[in-house]
Image (cartoon, rainbow, N blue to C red; front, side):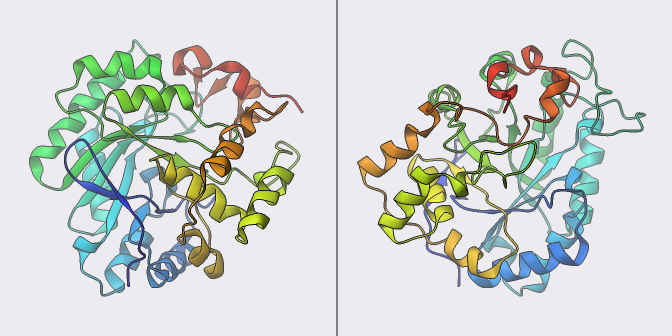
Length: 324
């Protein structure tokens, strides 16, 4: 049975479940791990899955959906256009749909605004076209809009777009993005971007809504944070439930990833946060050293993320160059 979670109505009238399962495994692929993760998630009540061409596991996600025996129309499925495919949108989408083998895709996202050079040895490296070089993300979006005429994709959106790049894109849109998927959690609440997108009718989707495990390149962990742990203890729930519930109560979609069946069940069990609970999490980024990315601080040492500078991406550099 599907979990009882709210859905949000997007600007094109379609509905998107507020919680999904992120299918990025840390490295491309995952094979049976991804297949089993998705099957277990379906058993736990998940009906929203988020993958991408760059994740290398569309086939496994699609197979789990088909093998579940649950009608296709009960699922919400997202995949994404890879950076090297900005100049071949139609072909790339058809390849993703063939890999998924799920009749149609509910949501197709432009994974990043930068177009990767398709002949590069590193598809997700720094070999990218500059913002003014063709294919620009405006040209790519125009090609994505054409996909809607084929009936194989219901909605289109973007990912990793800043206010700066949305202001470039939106005047050229015949169809507005339904969502903008970005890193978002209490350390990076994206308040300005959230307010801007809401003013344009665009819902934010949070990837890495739980942050990242602590490590040499990222010692900050929301799971080890005393403020978050104290709140979770007060509510008698785990930290992930608090963070996910905070995201949903902010009217954002969250797509945490876990292979642990117990955490799958708890992640999709929301808790009602009181205004004072929400404020604790809203204000966490105001703590010294806490307003920062939990995904890209190591990559940002080069001054670029996937080949574009912070200025080109429109990202606030100080949030991505945190030194520990």
